[in-house]
Length: 363
Image (tube, rainbow, N blue to C red):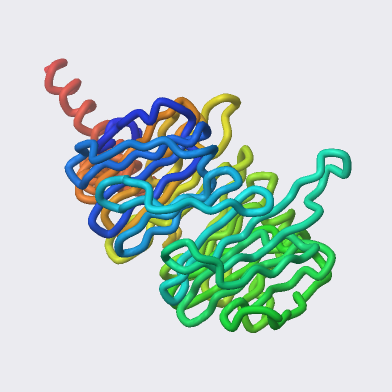
């Protein structure tokens, strides 16, 4: 099925989209490369649009505030109106932000052009009013800031690698990785927390190795059951919680991936493969049912999803939204959604009918 025929809403941010977020009430937030932040309600109506300092790298949504990582700053906006509550500057670019126990945890990093590497990073904690609680500077860059259940951890690059327990504040407890390779990706759910490494290792919070993939882990997504690890070469592998292979897909590099929706109790996995200046967005069934749908669009830079809505943000400024009910209805109406065996039986039946009609015509 062509995903473009099943979109529920398409809006334009007016600039390349760098971050998207959809909440449980189907409200959509999008941020752009030039700092624009926009909000649409569950019916697709524009709620507000504001301009921030710089490119939006990440969002953290609280009960009252939407906090955006905007260039060198954290910017707190009223969730319902977009009015700016406060803004604080970090040392280096604001890479990630998340809520933790009513406060905000953020990661910043300084990139040195001459060394072609990150030379210093920091983890910050602020109150919901933007007041600093503590900051911890380090040589390593935290490539993943994860909240899962009662855990708050960061996955580190070189030299230490491994992960830091951020719950109690500095000095942090450091856990070595199963191999000496740096962390490159991470993902958390209510039941699991995983890290991916440059040597292809995927490991859990307790340090146990879940699998070893072919290539550096570029993206990692915890599913309701199992996980999907994608290498920098575009090799996507779906596995059970125990690491047993369920399915795999090879192709061009993947720019973004996520879990969104379920069909017959099975999670649906979304990934965008680069196609030059464009992307091919694919939806897979994680129970070995294969690829369910795909669609070509402007290059996908960001995505987010819930049980009811899926959102992607594109380089041409498009914010594209799918609704679960509408998508499932379209899948049911598409013959290919039934699978190759059903398609073969349908083709055979159509051939017999054509033969019968031809026989009747000859008579």
